[in-house]
Length: 77
Image (tube, rainbow, N blue to C red; front, side, top):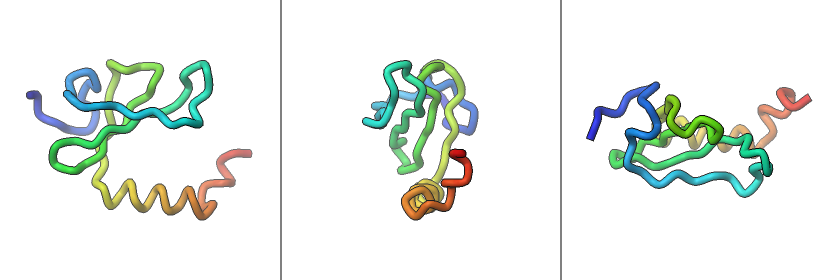
């Protein structure tokens, strides 16, 4: 397996990608996957071979909590 780092080509990761049920029919969304060490990889669903961003589980937890509480609502409009 190739080393995992930020920007690694997503198709090099041997993981199962998950897409949100909120994804639109055009495929405009992100997909996530849990890496063997517990980190989380994120990729653009329109570019499945493109770069993956890698976050710790704590970073993803902070982001999800912020999204749930509306911290990023100003970005929507």
